[in-house]
Image (cartoon, rainbow, N blue to C red):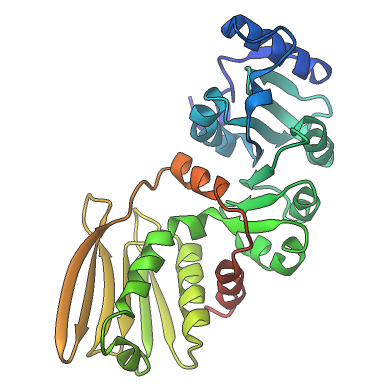
Length: 310
């Protein structure tokens, strides 16, 4: 069975859209005797997380949100886009899955099902780019996670007027950016970087490479640096080399590992260390986004600069 064929909440209870809240309350009462009838476990949640996209990408999202939903810390709403005005609905005590909902009805569904007194995070996993602006108006945070993010990135100025915006690619690059930034604490590095002319990035995801290059370029305000990307199967980013053919700063993911070898090779020194990338699972990345409460100015600048990266 492919991801596209799987039901979003196979353990959930089938219901209708009009009876979602009452069904969730009945499920909660049956699962937890100490919960009063008519009161869903979602009432104890601290946020609503709405994942929107094609069903093939929503199955993975459902798995990433399940632990937090079952713990009662979030209400998880999964909306798989399709062609139905009346979607198939399944619920648990803290999860809602709408399958096949037509695009024009998604905003109404989000407005009706989000917990109004709590922050709402919309996790965009794909669909019509223009819809993101409407969804952003219903969200406190909009987290982009499309397979092709560029059509969304060019809307950044409009999106940030409606909500706090980020991208899971940016979240996944956190350790890579930190490791590169740490180089600049070393004596001699800032002066050497002023002479660097080339940034080489290898990996499976050109968009992640552009975002990293955009961040570095916006941070350093470089003028004449050539950016090259080499596609390799595997991790989104595998290797980053920033230098001029003689001196260089490099980050290389160790084979079969979540560790990165960080090396500064300058004329007067050669420093090598290894650091962990931490938990890069989808669940961990979304959990990290839930902790963010402010505009990420560096991300917004990186996206704008990424547009100039070939």
